[in-house]
Length: 219
Image 1 (tube, rainbow, N blue to C red):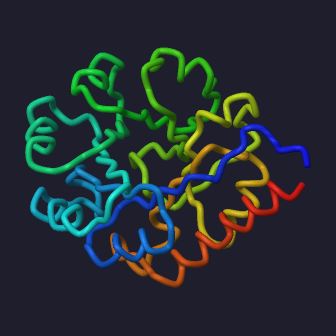
Image 2 (cartoon, helix red, strand yellow; image 1 turned 90 degrees about the horizontal axis):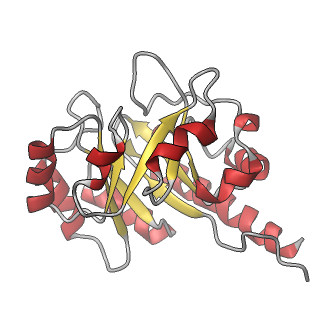
Image 3 (tube, helix red, strand yellow; image 1 turned 135 degrees about the vertical axis):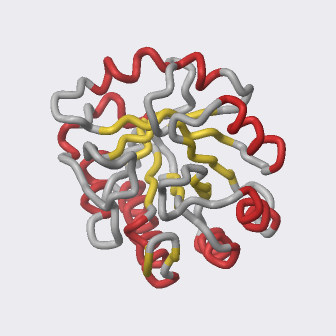
């Protein structure tokens, strides 16, 4: 059997968690990472105390990603001093020097604004561990539930891409077949309400990802 490249299980991050029970359910279903939003304007924002409670209940080998939007160095360091954050996700207009300044692995979110050259946008952030590619809306930094045209993603960049933007149990299969990204990130698509995850929707989402991986390895 010819194994397609890259050969891997699609990694999954569920972002915008606000309750320990939702995080544990996500882990039970097989997610690789959870996302905690440290951006006060977001309805999924968590305080340091909430974040600590969520992280405290996690089993080993689950990656904790902290999402920040143009956060000051001092405020970000305050979070890192009090919460176990394994990977930083920069979701604003942060420059590469700021992203590198904290001595942690990091990923950069890029929103697919009309006309964006993705390869050119990625180039200055050569130190990133990956690029979260999200839908673009002028008045929001993310978590909008909007999708974008997946055909805009060059196939040769798929191994660096964490696909986000309006993913749901209903469209994740099509998204995976179109992009074949290294990982996917979902937030609003598995919610009962903003910041409140729905166990059935999380289950359905993970099942579609797992089915895609099985079928890909069987090609």
